[in-house]
Structures are given as structure tokens and as C-alpha cells.
Length: 410
Picture (cartoon, rainbow, N blue to C red):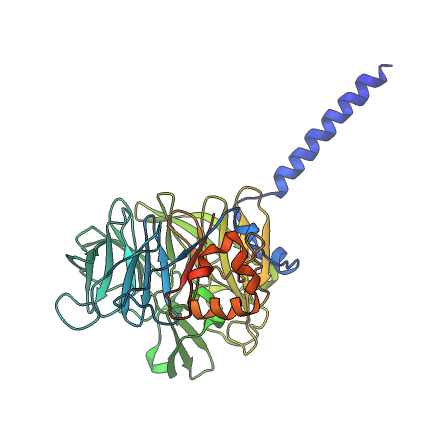
């Protein structure tokens, strides 16, 4: 009997079997939240990328950024919104370019300083109630307007090659429409209804409404939260300007609240792209307003992606007094998930700087954060040796009155 040949054959069969089993267990389209919650870890900046860059934003007299700013990083520009102003900076050096438009009631003034950009990043767009987007070029020049007919203004916008996509939350007077598809002139071509009728508010059942900003909900609530209490103890949280859509590598993605699927938006329809597997922590959309027995349920709050990762934040016990916010990082190539409590600081193991707080992903794939100068100076008082760190050379010219520092990881 030829034992060596048999042993070799057995080894080949075993190897193939193992490979097949491995392929079956790694599904790169499924983000396993249940697994992540049962194996919490602590994230570091090296989990997000290998290179980190610090961009101190120029501090001109006419370009001072207020506290709690909102940042959007594009291919060539950094957009910062704060205290009803929108400021534009050069991404390469952080130099100030212009204040974009003005808040007010005039014919070329916006009624909301939150902005979007088109697929070519040529213009910034701002709401002007009741049904108009004003557009400005990247030097701050007025470039015209788009009037939307019908449906009025959406809660969030995204652009693709064919037109404009608008998302409507429960506060918009859009009837049953969740997504509206417009041409570049604002004319409605098609729409998709809400997944659940709970997206529409029964106004006669409302017991009270309050509006607040609370970082407890992370990126999802960065521009404010509308808290609605119903007479039957149900509850609804609606976040203003929440990014339910994002653009990545020429594709527009969409993720609705209380729906575990990420979709690709194309040809006026939704195609499943990835799914969050929440298992025992699942929160069904039909119970979206229920505040009872939801302590262990998980709500997927904010999602975005780049070439290598899907970054997301999720909240356990959203309607309770003991919410827990988590940061999640899903490796698109290996299927590995890393989930950490947001209270566990993300150590900068690349340069030794202040802990990293991810605020999303730029349109070119860098992970983005922003730290205000007064926080930098407080940290520097405790870490004076950092001024001799060549990776942190920008610290040597800083003071507490300067504009914030933008941090990019790729």
C-alpha cells in the first residue's frame, strides 16, 4: 500500500475542507453586531489607518469658528459650520478661503447653515425655506438656486450623475415618501415610500416636543435632536440633518433608522449592500416608537465607509436613562468587526496625541476628527514633552484663541 500517497491525498482533502469552511464562515456583507457586543475591544488610531495628518485651520478675524462646530471634509476643501455661519478652508494647508453665504431672510440668504455638495464638489448647497436650495461656488460666490417641486425641502440630500436624491424624515410634509428622486432642476421624477408608517407622526397623540443637542447620541445627533413624547408613553427621536445617505466610490448608500440593511441607491431603486446582524439585540422597525422593554435593544445610529472599512456608531438602550454609545469598525476585506464603548478613549498610538474621536469619513476616504484649540492647550499643559515630538510640530505655534485642528487618518 502506498501510504505516502494516501497521506498526501488526505492532507489535500483536509486543506480543501478547511478552506471551504473558512469561506462559509466569513461573509463580508454581514456586520455582526451581536458578536462585537460580546467581544468588546478598545480601538486605537492604528485600527483606522497607518498615516495621520494634522491641519491647524487658519484663524483670520473674519473666519473665527465658534464652539461645537460641524465639519465636512471634501477632496480639496474643509467645510466648517458653526453658529449659523459656513466657513471654507483649503484642505492641504488649512488656509482660510471664504465665508460661504449668510444666514438670514434675504433673497440670497439661507435659513439653515448646514450644507451639502454635489458629486463633482463644485458647489455647496443650503436650504432656504420653504422649497429652495441656494448654491455657492468654492470661492463663496452665489451660483443660483434650485426649487423643488413637489414635496418641498428634504431632511438630507445626496447627488449622483443623474440628479438629486432627497431623504424625508417624519418631520417633513412629504406624505408617505421616504426618498425623492429629482433632476438637477429640482423636478420630482420618482419616489420610494417609507418602510413603516411609524415614520409619519400622529400629531394628535403628541404629549410634548423638545429640541436639544446632546453628544450622548454621537455623530447621529451632531446638529440637534427633536424629542417627541406621545401620550401612550411611546417616544421618537428625530435628528436634524442626520446623514442617512453617503457617497462612496461613485455609489450612493442609504441606511434608514431601525432598518438593519445598508442599500445602494441607483436607478431610483434600492439594492441591498450590507446587513447589520443584531441577533438578540434586534430592534424591529414595527417597535420603533416603543419605549418599553428596549434596554438591551441596539439602534444603529450613524454609518459611513471607505475602501477598507465601514465605520458606524450604535446605541444600546436608546430610550432609557442609561444609554451606551459604541464605536464600530468593520473590515470589508476580512469581515472582522471591532466594537468599543465610546467612553473608552481611542488612543493615538501613531503619534501620541490627544485621543481620537471619529466624526465620519471624508469624501476621499480619510477618517476625520476635529479638536478645538482650547482643548489642545489643556492637553498640552499636561503633556509639555509633546512639543518636542516632530510628529506634533504644529503644537509649537498654537494658542487657545486659534481655530480648531482637523485630524485625518488614512
